[in-house]
Image (cartoon, rainbow, N blue to C red; front, side, top):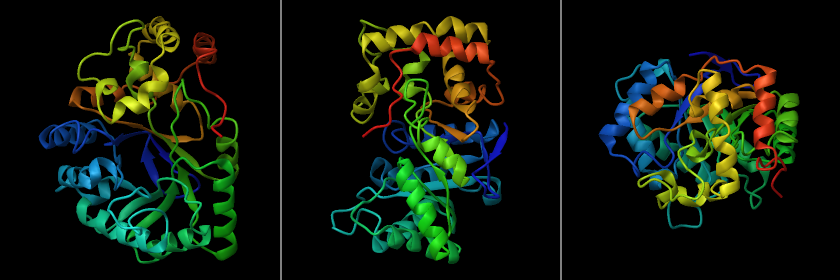
Length: 324
């Protein structure tokens, strides 16, 4: 496993990280989740990503239990705040009250005294950005959070946060966590150039497009029973990739992967890691074997000719324009 620095910070992360959205506390049992986490550790993954809202807060607890007894200095633990975690008006968003209280609750569920990277899960237009950034800075100064990041912020929002943090002397953002894959390239036009200039890295989620880039979904056929496309949580996220046009194009990636000596999933993960602004690609798993397969993408270099072949195959089906 190779490691990369996160932005201009001193924090190194494994270039493949383990995330537990949808799986832990929801799709798989706790024993299987623990086996997946330990498979990740065995394969050299040191970076673990979760969020307070995943599985209605259960995912943090499951991850904390799976990591219990592992030397705390040996891994990097990331979580997020924004989405509702309770019924009250202050149980959501990026106001000071919710950020501070959510951080304390995450620490308790994760069974740790500090979060390595605390991320704003979305942008909150209802709260002054200065308030959000100062609340994060207070957590850093208290030693409860080591670094701060964001998730799915636009280039303009990232730039505003960097400017305000510099003006007020607050801890600066070092990362953004966007969706990014061969099929979903919306960060390339604006977010990546802005982030590169500001010394901010991407920690990307869904590098295999919710499983579509594994090639297991076939055009004209129903999705496999028990797959993410049939799940209550995952089906909505994967729907944009489930057209016959997209699924047919994905099947044309199979000979490219085979020729490179990679599985389809490994090709997809290796592809996002060719972007120098990407520090880590988040993978999830419902079985330990999936972790081991995904880690095969670590350190893979894809030659320009191969990248050009991928672009040709996916021309017309890959989304490149930033979302409005």
